[in-house]
Amino acid sequence: MFDAILRGWEQQQRSRLLAKKTISDRLSLVRRFALFTATYPWEWTPEDVEAYFSHQLSGASPLAHSTVRGQQGDLQMFCAFVTDRRYGWAAACDEVFGQAPVQVCHDWNTADHVAEYEGRPGRRALTYDELQTLFNAADDLVELKRKRRRKGVLAAWRDAVMIKQVYAYGTRRRETSMLDLADLRHNPRAKQYRRFGALEVRFGKAARGSPPKRRTVLTVPEVDWIVPVLEEWVDEVRGGFSPGAHPAMWVTERRGRLGLRRLDEVFAAIRDHAGLPDELELHCLRHTYITHLIEFGYPERFVQQQVGHVYASTTALYTWVSDEYRNRLLEASLARRLARLNGEGLEPR
Image 1 (cartoon, rainbow, N blue to C red):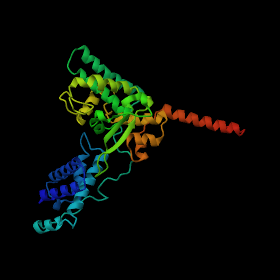
Image 2 (image 1 turned 180 degrees about the horizontal axis):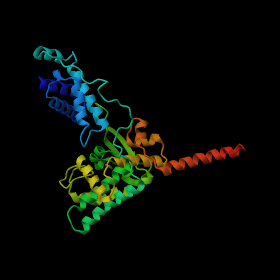
Image 3 (image 1 turned 90 degrees about the horizontal axis):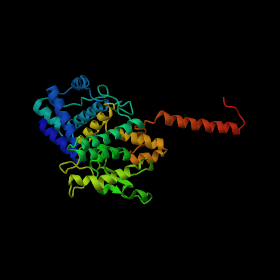
Image 4 (image 1 turned 90 degrees about the vertical axis):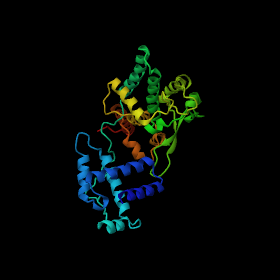
């Protein structure tokens, strides 16, 4: 019966066009919950929910708040499915087992969404010095392998260019992995950048039940140093992997596409070589990009479109402007106020 219920829930989610990974993760959660409680859905109680998540939040590596809320929401969604009269599972369980499943996730035993940002505190934008240190470390790894005449020079070169591209265009992990050479675009308003005037992101973060979102990220003058870096990679270095007709921008030694896990491993290796804090992750380069666009003076709407956020409030959560930038804004505001007071013949208080 339990397997039949799971198959029915899987079919319901597939008909909603949800991503395979989303469905797989939800099914896995329900199975883990059943294994933890050693009971089936028609036997679950609210106390089981409390015991399970108390266990998940204990130990050396407790789950993040956002993860707990997400799992509780998924479990609540499963219970809503299995208790829905339209599917008949509750009646079937009552007839066979003498017990019917009930909703076990309620307002009083699940977490509230009270904070706008629930990410790890260590995930932040890099300072300008940290960013330069990271890039220097990436280049240094290339030179070390070259001097020692070891294999992997091309891979280290690819890794150095890749992390610079992540910062220069603010791409997410999957967006970076799925980039093809064809995604390099001309910008008629910036002909000096040639085919590197923009980047077409075709695998942006999708809304629930929708295909990946697309956006065009323009190359901004403040990071146009990325143009010769990418040009050298595309025209001179990438061919060393013998990729043939493979379209991926970031290819592996086995002529495949660089995967998400490998992207994380690459960043971690360069970060450790640079001596930067362990809590910094690849996604922090996206935070840095957003922050720097704001500090460069670009309007919020432009930044929002560059990074593919639906809401400006999301962009604000990723922004970590420096004290220097805030002080510049404060000084400009004070100067305007002083000029206004002088024009009115008043003394500042």
